[in-house]
Length: 225
Image (cartoon, rainbow, N blue to C red; front, side):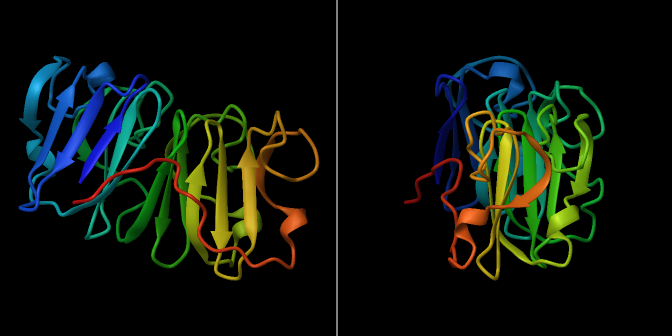
């Protein structure tokens, strides 16, 4: 698996068939996870992720990076000025570290990143969010940054979510019954709710009522060999 990311596409992550993870590129905000701020012209091994069974990555524009393992664990590193690493601080992360706060005992099946916020989906359909929340993109009902993963409840309570994705400062989810919910920045109507008002809680997209939706397109792309 290979992923290219960063604000200018200047960083890359590579996962080999033997579960070794390498990084290369400019290392903006320490987003290569190599333990330092130095760029590298050659692939450099990320020891913290080797043999972890990396399933997929997600990344924001800070940049910050999330990695999901086949055991349902989430690791984060890189820019953290808006709490997007979910470790309870705003300290930059130079080494991938497991996101433990409020996710202990949870099996994560999907991850997504906006510019400076992050989402995680559990196998029982719960959505957790953290990071920048100036537009309500964390779905907490308020607009202050969220330092650690928090269950997105409100209108998603009791519903099983099967898919998550992020815009720059917005979030969307699909439930197992095919309903679509959006929250966060809505300045150009990207939530599809008929107005331009930001939403601090998930709101059902009314124009899709009665239409069963499958998985949304992911907020990034990767290639497998």
